[in-house]
Length: 407
Image 1: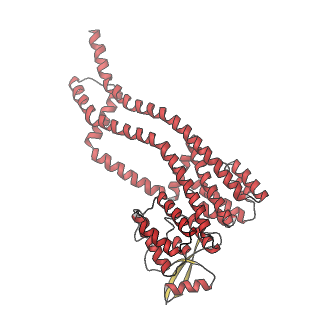
Image 2: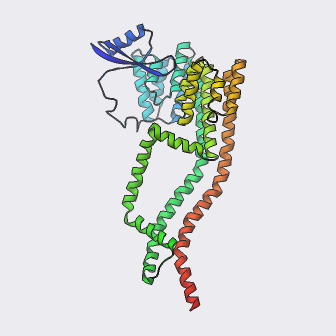
């Protein structure tokens, strides 16, 4: 007999594993089902090292927009009474995105083999996040999959809207920074060396700003390959560094500490997690399990850990509002007060929806203010950068002009 590792969802919504001896994976799943465990996936122990392909998934990501369109169409088909297998097969054929098409074809094949819908979604938790797949489980178990998919469509639509706002706000500063880098590089590579040749003939001591610009140009021109290679290695290192827990804490902590921008990012996360939490509770998932689910969907690790601590304290018998209050200012005071009202009135889901709408509006206003503030700042930055180089180049000429005028 062989040993199989059965993956399933525990009581708190977190992943747990069980080792079972069986002759095949199907037999292991059957044994798990007898024990009251609904398996997500079953793999043979020792069959394949989890580190055999460290770059797995790097080029197989599916954009959120594609997930949204799939969910919307899936909700429409199921609401119209089209069987799940036929819906998945039709969407797999009509999907243009290569990675999503491959995933849907695999899901269709697994459903055809008799696997549950929730299991095939859990197999692709990298594409469909934890909130998504848990809601699919609720929809399948309750028989209300079309309603759950409709709520998921609303959630994804809100997420896409917030992301578009961020991209719109960051488009201008990103463009200015890119143009600034291009112009500065062109000046250092093409123009500054000519001044270097001219000043070399004078044989006089140059001003310190001019020396710095000439040295930077010489370094850039003589070692441009090393500069590009070093920049590439730095970006790769940063990506690996950010994937570590320590790296995320450093970067996310820095982001949260930034004036104005940090508050804007926090409100963005609060708007998303409260909307997801509202949908989870409205769908029948318990408050503790919902907290555990949304904690893994938060982008800022400090807020993620705060929500996880709330889940632990609520599980210990403390109210949600009181648990939230202990996590201020990561979880703002207004959120705690609204949750308290929701707990006392029994309308927690409705209160969370109000909180989400409020913080989404706050986020929109902050983005508008940020965009109005960043435009003049970027122009000043561009002027100081490029203008500073030009002034530094002409300083020796100004000095020579004064010297000639004295003679």
